[in-house]
Image 1: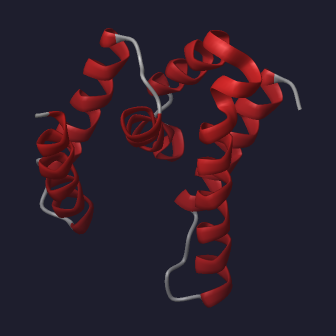
Image 2: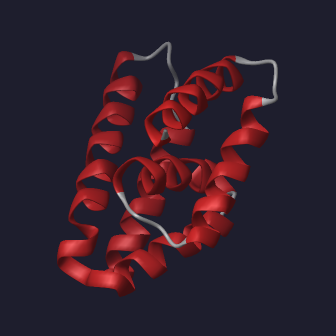
Length: 120
């Protein structure tokens, strides 16, 4: 797979996750497999595509469809060393979600606390 195909694959995986029906075991299984594959893409991104891979991946911060920007934000901050502007944008996205009143917000409140503690 080339870089463009890899980026498109990642976007497709976020779509699978966005369509998850948590009442359906098969749907949840597909979700979990998709998340695993996203991590594999992120973990090999720099090795396969170098700095250009990171630049192209950071562009996904602008893709709100299927919460792609949310997935990218987490993966950038957890697994990669993004440019400062991309790091700021990723944190902005996560902080915005953490202000809500749903389970996603609560999860990201904890995620932010853990991430910030690791930065000290």
